[in-house]
Image (cartoon, rainbow, N blue to C red; front, top):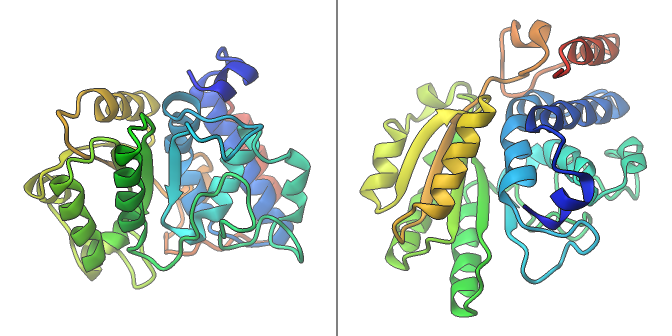
Length: 283
């Protein structure tokens, strides 16, 4: 259990955490009338497992040396990370209203220099895993027991730098590195599988010397079990967990739309989305 879990109370279910993360993201999206809300809703279950089951951290001390590091390679997912940082108590909830505003610590594309709890400035896609390899190698040389979790998009699987990093991670036996792939099959140019398919993804990671498995990223128990195996049953190798997620998960009327990389929400739909989400709140 992380320090933050103990402080907030371990009796709160992961499903409730995911609900609150989705709600935080919708509230931020409403502030600006936009944001990568489809991705935030889709990855909420993975973030709930990450921050309230897997990661060791201290909310009151984001730079705690013994923390696990969560790297957001996908800079435009910042709204999702802010949502979980608020739920974890690393960021105060009242800052939610400043999202994307002047002088806000919550810019629309994440920057580590601005936001406590954000480890890297992502957004130049395909770079996160390489940074993660360097960090994991550094922790190994310091004999640290901390882990690196790198969240990347399926579109980043088309970047050569991703596979150079994968090869390096296996070479250096970085069993303290977990790569989490959000596979929602969307990128700016269309479906990822039609733009430049990386299938079979898990077989590719295994060919590079990794443990790899694929799970339903919106099945909290499946994600939790996969994270546990990545951390404790990795056989001295880096691990990849490929998570198939549904864009806009938790808000059925948005899920039912023709989904693209950037989901537009009309001004009158933000409150409707919150109401629908609240109606489906875990018991």
